[in-house]
Structure formats: C-alpha cells, structure tokens
Length: 142
Image 1 (cartoon, one colour):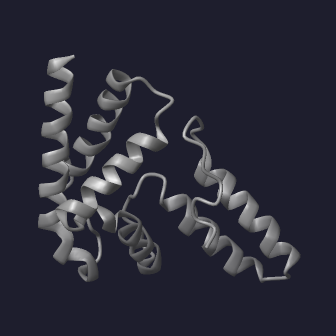
Image 2 (tube, one colour):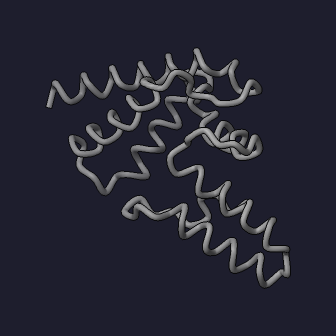
Image 3 (cartoon, helix red, strand yellow):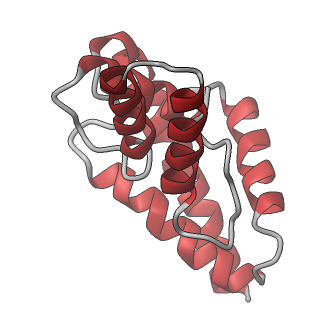
C-alpha cells in the first residue's frame, strides 16, 4: 500500500521516502520489525525492478510492471499519462530519458520475473518496441 505513496518526478528517492513513511507509520501501529523490514524491502525493490530471492517481492515487481503488457490502447493511455506526469521536461529531454528507460527493459532476458506474469511478456515487448519507435521518430523530426 505504500509503494509510490511518495512520488515526485523531480526526485530520485521516491522509493526510499515511501519506505521511510511506511516504516514510521508501521512502527506507530506496533507492527513487528520483521514485517516492517520486509515491507521496506518490497518497496525499495520497485526502484530498479531487479530479481529478488523473495518471491513476494518478485510478484510486487511484476505487478508494478504489468501495465507494460496491457492491450495496446491501454498501453498508449499509460504512455500518454507518463508524458503528462513528466510535462515539466521539454520533449527532447523527456524522449531521450524515456527511450533509455524502455531500452533497459528490452535488453533483459525476461521483463517479468514470475511465471504468473510471463503471459504478458510478448505484449510488453511489443508495446515497448512500438513506443521506442514512436519516440525515435519524434526525435528525428525535432
């Protein structure tokens, strides 16, 4: 529930700040420290979406990325929403950063870690490739 509770596109520590807020609130609710630490690890793992030894963390990471494998129209709406979120950045700067972020996903052997989300892999790759092509076209026209 605390994943991305702190979210500011101009900051690089949203996950860390979300985890700090979660920890503080959970301590005040007297939740045991092992559970708090596990929650913190889940939140922090969404920063880089790397494979974890904890399967619950991997499920959270995959759920966080699941929009990538949505139907093309839903993905386009998501991509437009991302552009709106980052509207403080001029088009060339945004497009270069977005393309670099998307290319990292395509370079991975698998975008989704868990078998539960593997059915989204092909759609995610197609959506990402399509967005990269659109971004590249826009950059070449500017």
